Length: 179
Image (tube, rainbow, N blue to C red):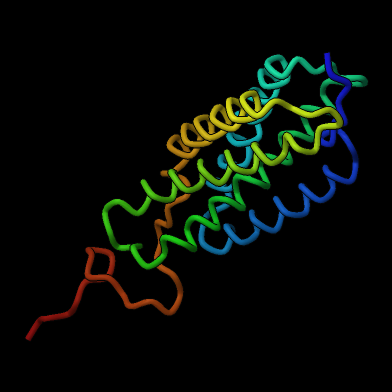
């Protein structure tokens, strides 16, 4: 068994992750309604806490202290990471916003970025983590991120027009063509 440096359970990582997650959620709040934000945050927090519990079992690390502290810190950290990765992926794929495959690329890039972050996060362990174990953990993280993002994509989509954008020609805003 390894003796870990559990960064996820430290107060400063939880504080930084909370600030980053709050900033990312506030950025999303500009275009999404509050119930979508609540569902996105709770879905990602719950999914990442469950995943972190199983990743802890896989990495054979013992937690000293309260398990809920570790799981809460890890869930906050991964909420911030996934929201940041999703924002970065949308920024990269922005030129193809009108294409039918836009969200496919956003999901794929978010999963890849989260996997790369997981692979790099293993280097912060006090004892060296074998590259194969770190790669497996990164693959699990990327796959889980893809599944979570796939389930939450309908709530990430903007469903109302932005202020200042041209009016649509749908039934809510018909054109007056009467003579």
